[in-house]
Length: 128
Image 1: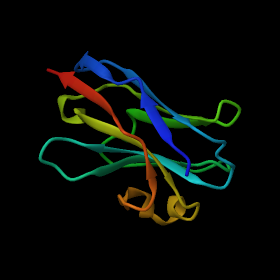
Image 2: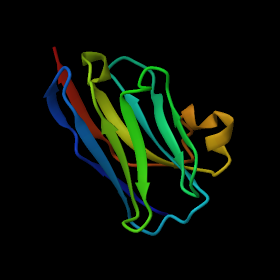
Image 3: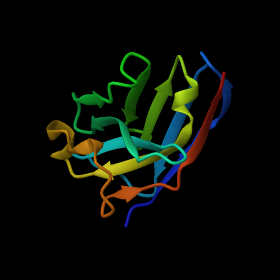
């Protein structure tokens, strides 16, 4: 089973930027849906963004549109989340996710499903 490892979290002030990275233990072929979730204390897990590894499709939660950018480097087998204009409400543990290909185009990517593959998470803290 593939393993995902996130990195790049940290503490920043409001308005700052961070870039999260996700490395996979084996090559992720094109034709999969990969994404980022987050969970803040006492809150439900939330789908943040997703990308179709076959090219073309990116998807965002309304709360991050215009501020976050998801990207994939197939050559490096890596997934990224560039986060700009960070707000205190973005404070959460962020998780990388690998999902079935069809989830990207149907909105299912926003659903945390225990049988998908997730990393251990990286903490993002934004202070006001």
